[in-house]
Image (spheres, rainbow, N blue to C red):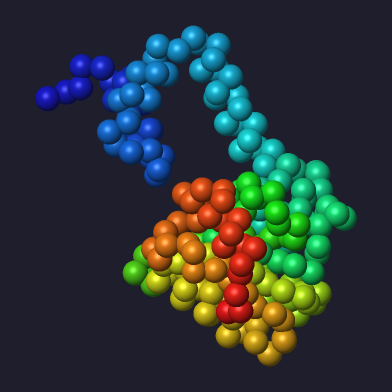
Length: 200
């Protein structure tokens, strides 16, 4: 049976390409867009294209930044450049920032090692981290990775390669539930796990 509303079907197909949009919400989002004022929909499309064209990863820490502007973390002289928090993605970085207690810098891996999904060390920003440490060093590296098998495996892989550099390696305290994703935890839990971090 042919779809009686081909334009709606095309919209739904595009929404299905968004990985974190639950299928049960596709129709709600589609209806919201159809009912919204045309100017608001245009503003949304413009904002998406502006972000796509003007935002790119920092060459040092790989968090998002505006083109032709300094990184808000790497170029902030108020931050401790010798304290580096290693996170999986921008979402985890923001979870740490929400605690308002961390004053170091970051390194965004862009994922976790997961052989079942075909993701190996070469697919992440691990080598740039190693080169960053070899060139500039650090006093401490904090592994702020999700306490899942993938997070543990990634931290161990990196730690093994950093041991010869005699950098202090720490990780969040065990207050974070095993198997949990950092981005979904409340600010107080992340704050306590960060402030009570332990040697890795």
